[in-house]
Image (cartoon, rainbow, N blue to C red; front, side):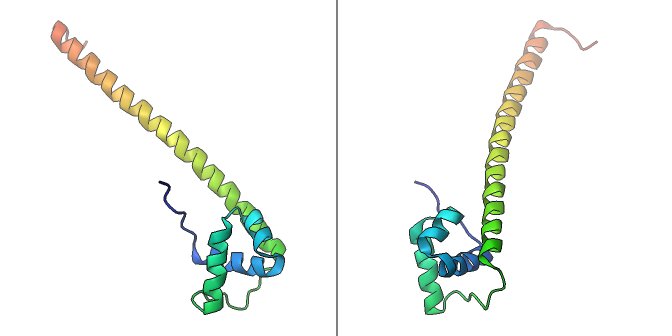
Length: 112
């Protein structure tokens, strides 16, 4: 089961404002978020649970921020994948080092 993504309050506010400008469907497509998530935020904004303030960003600025966010999320995923590979390699090297050290001790060889 996947864990839900966590969005910061500023992202939610901008998503709600964008939805008001171009509609929920368009905002979801542009921001890459589920329709249900945005609908919940819009409902909370209408109920006063999320304060969206007066807003100074235009839809173009919001879309630019969304593109930056998508690029950052992609980069994070790439870095996490590379990190996992490095951790696996490090674990392998530690095991190999222990194996060769034990082998060397058994053979009675000393470090030169």
